[in-house]
Length: 376
Image 1 (cartoon, rainbow, N blue to C red):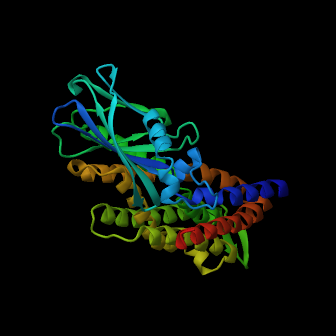
Image 2 (cartoon, rainbow, N blue to C red):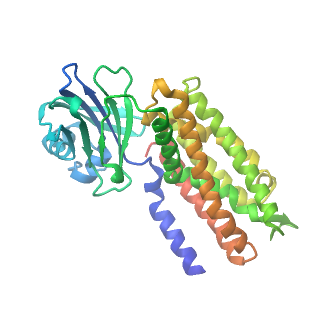
Image 3 (cartoon, rainbow, N blue to C red):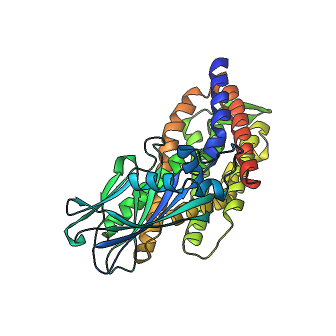
């Protein structure tokens, strides 16, 4: 058991910093011209991703200057144009003008802004986008695309991943079912790769198969007792983040991204430390889930904003994303609860998983908090 715990500790501490940041995304805006054959493209790529692939930081001081980025403009343009292509009517669309490189600030750092134009044949005969920017080095990387078809005022959001690197660009708005399906899947995907949300939920669920008696953790007698505790926590968390996710997505409430991400990290620390103390806070975890769930909802809203909300299907997209988050959350619970219940009588669970695990979760989340709060 000691070897297993040591391995887990090393893995968490080694990967904690990497998991603190949001997943790697790039942002593409593609607009068709009135002539129905010209495409105008704006592509925002994170400098940290370009530095990883092209080693832009020449002096190795950990900071990228405009001079270091600009001196590699040709390499950046070459990388980008080689990982993005459009095909119309079976024929590739050649690139035409390329705008000068610019920089733009996003909530998670500075991005290089590339501008391209492509000349295609008649779009009415079909247009396909192939995207593969970082798939060879980061399978979780995604391209978030806003596609504006000829004559359409509202852009269509699309997500390109390893398993969906080639997609047709529809000249008509997607159906309600297709919009719902897309946002449900995005909600599921986000909770599964949102390590801070997962650790917060796990920290709250770890004591669910135990009860505090005479200052010590004892196993619960029945699965029903554990299930009731889990339902309280999950329901409180769901209700809370649904409220703020909706308010933020509808533009009614807004909080600074840095504040939200820092408090989310702090919530993980508090939830994990409550397991070590085993006091009143640990017994009322549903209340903790609700209070901090309000902040987690703002975190979900920022992801939804990155995806882009179709204004003509705003409610549908919002409901779909929220349903997806709940489905992803229930899948985690479905795996956790039977396993924890089976192990609840063992010292491995009470000491190794609950106490040592909570301590490791607190340490990792504390590092996330420092990174986010002080922008390290």
